Length: 244
Image 1 (cartoon, rainbow, N blue to C red):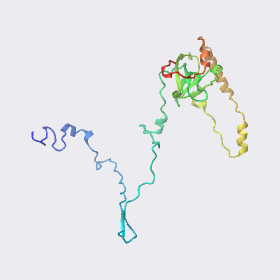
Image 2: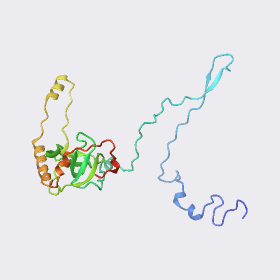
Image 3: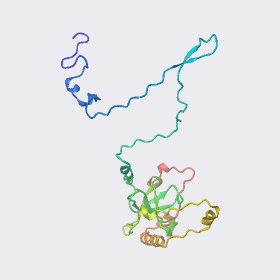
Image 4: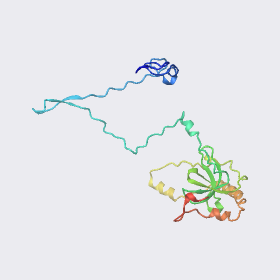
């Protein structure tokens, strides 16, 4: 073939085969078709303006370019993350997937919060928030029933039988707090500080019921001492080489 001559079966203009030219992927949406969304016309950019300049040697006038924007975004400014969801309700309905190493009865090590370094027993994952329901138990190391994020725990290989513990009543609403009305008066502010928080007797009864079931299963040797001892790292320890 001579230079510029198309191969048989290909268009000399597009150099595509008839099959690929008919493929919808190669078609451009025509804005004149029915149902197309017309693009909004962008405002024309301002051009240079003619301004009078004083001085006998300056020519009397000068073309001045328009000034650019005075605001420049910072490099560390957070941008909204693109999420492929249909609605906010769909986003809120998503629950974090539970790690395969965390099962009911697994002993976890807390890495953050008030009880960081404590070992607790995992009971279940809450349906709405996806947080983990754990307990010390309170009689052993002082950790009550509370919710923790699975991103801030270490799952160990130690297991406790919690099949007899009833945790059906515990959900996110169980741990919700009543909203307090803030006041600007100093007297009321200091009076509220002086008030001592009282623990709900129902919470105490629920904690005792759960602890009794867990304490009955702590029959392995040194298991209570293991739950009591806090987790810490010393100089020279290698966490990545440890087996929990």
